[in-house]
Length: 567
Image (tube, rainbow, N blue to C red; front, side, top):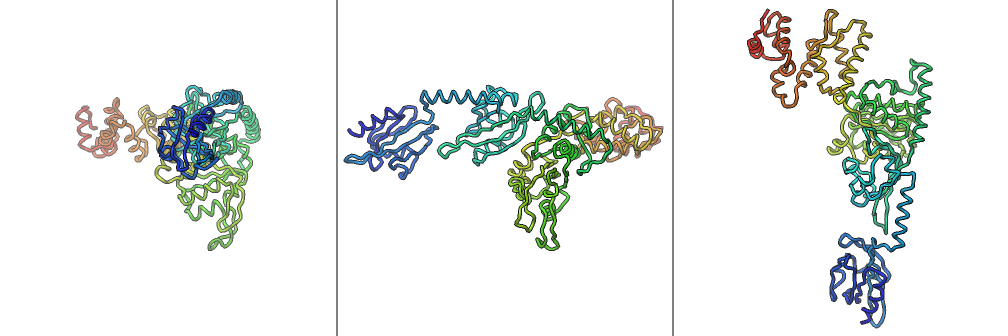
């Protein structure tokens, strides 16, 4: 048969051949077993190959995926007394020896590059990780190749830049971020991410990371020398750029805080937008101002705005500016983006920004162009944007209070400030620091804290963080008299005493703690403390019970239990 003869000749050059008649019926075939194309003579090829009749035209070539294999199908038309269609099938992974040698050489070249290269496939699995990338991130390729990116770097898959690039086909340029941490030290790299397309189809994504360690060290030295010169000229000289703080003003002794400051200094060297995440009172603006003053933008303005304090309509005009006639009473006025010039714009509590305004902010950050309200003209955005949130961005995104695309724009680099309750060393440091500070301010002798009170303060969860601790110490020093030998629990303001006592027990004893707030706190000195309160209230049961935060009946029970005396 002529169709078999033609097919056999072509089959010697490709992985499979199928000969069809003009109605797409199979006349003859010979296909590699690996391809698993289970067909039969006399059947219509369209029942087995995912294509349309329009694609089965002469000299057409198209790609298909069959049984998880990527195949290239080329259609050839052969005219004799009848019309035949010949499908030449090639598996894209079937490399010739020459192609294998070429691939080996390319892999060797990639491994000798000074720039780090990491590539992931359509599933987000790491398929390439060169030697330079290992040095930059302190990881071993043998440990992460084959893993999903989010598993290798331990983050939520929805925030994967590779996954985002694979979906959109759009590259991401010049990011500066630490994806890995070695011995508690974040390993920052500057990188860009690019999609890879073949025959119009996305097949992979790769990131190219630049080794900037030497340049970064030189920049650090230059900025540090400049800071020391300025600092030595006048320690009391006020800053003229709108700031009050530098990294010298950030106090604390914990390793977590020192690592955080080092991380913030590393980020400051690069002209990149930053998202600072931390609870109320952790010092987000303190870090923002310090980062501005540590950077090359220090001579330019630092402009801060609290997004929660301004109504939506006013916030838009405040950020972007207005032109005369845009609305009643509007005048020509530049917005904060323009006012910040080449400096820093600090958007505090960005988690409170209305969702409708977030889309406008995202466009400004994406295009780096700002348009005043009521105007058609645009102005380039030259400032760096530092945002701050007192809530977890992942929670905000899940609850629909922050756009995911805005998060990608405001957080090319993120800084997470550890809460005070996780830094016990800093609690001790700040207690001593604020005692000394307010002792000098109020010019009065300050006694030491009792062991019981100190223990409670160390175990308190400090929802207001450093700011709450400072206010408490200030309040204590104001309240105590000069005859007090030691600051104890009774010297606490009533509202703080209740909070600290209630918070002292662990989760398993919370219910018991609400009924008997002092029961576990004074496990070793309960008897002494009750007797002390009885003495101070001259044996008045009602007053003593109120001061202890328990009922009269409960107090009577404890007096009887411990054999206490009433004065």
